[in-house]
Length: 119
Image (cartoon, rainbow, N blue to C red; front, side, top):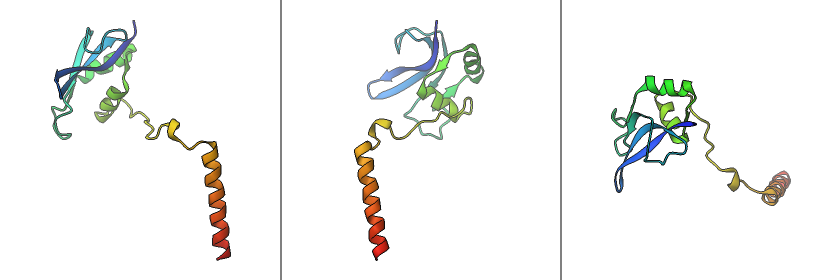
């Protein structure tokens, strides 16, 4: 039984409200969960204390028992300094320049350097 700390969506259409829950991997997103750990309301201002409410003791317990947190939950918990901030790459590797584009950039840079040396 693999457990995850994740967000379960609530609220109405275009007015999201999330509960921070511990659930099995196989359970549906908004379905059965083991324990509710807190709530997250993305519509509130970042400075508002009610935006993210978490029972820190229970979160630390579940992490010590072996529950994995989702990427978004890890990021939220890092804001409260409960866990370390994850390394999130801003640019996906898929969009990085490919081999031909890198060669083209290299030759352009060499040509630019040659022009600068002549001037």
